[in-house]
Length: 232
Image 1 (cartoon, rainbow, N blue to C red):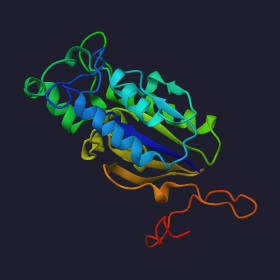
Image 2 (image 1 turned 45 degrees about the vertical axis):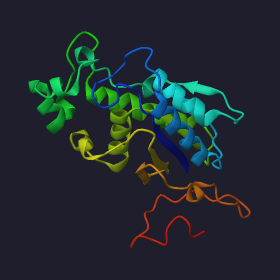
Image 3 (image 1 turned 60 degrees about the vertical axis):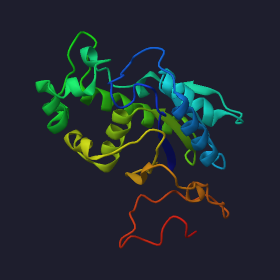
Image 4 (image 1 turned 135 degrees about the vertical axis):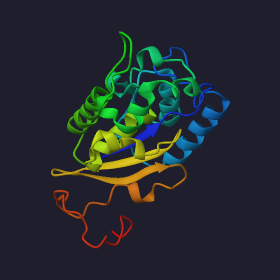
């Protein structure tokens, strides 16, 4: 059972009022660095097999904070990069809210292709991001826990896939800056362990001690809810 810890980057001076997209040279601001440092401290007890980041600077900054003190390389995977918003990149959200395409983004995102030669379809963003997660799951050990640092819409799209939701429902998911979302992948299905966690500990994410021969992780859901992941 491979566990992926999905982390959204911390705040930048554009986060919120402007659709940053692939804006180059956009690093964390002071608030974002504080968020990343707090996140790194939260995750410090968690053994990570890999730390993989979007190539954008705000994600690299965030991932570097988590990497500090760990004997790991920082891996970069372009497929975890932000959606390519094309001509929408760098524009204020208040202005974009008046564009007819905005309503489509909200209600029917699977049909959206962002305008301009660099614009990407949201369904293609989801496909590449999910492929990246699946590829890293395959590359790492079956019991590995690894971290992927990416962007709000990208993480929402990955979570929607894990939940079996159509992409048109992904706007129901909230992913805040420097939040932690945890997915566990088994042979038959992924399990959504956490979504948009901004303050929880990681004790329940720690590897369970092996008792003799390793057993294959169950793909069965706990009928009735089970006793929780803390009950070993």
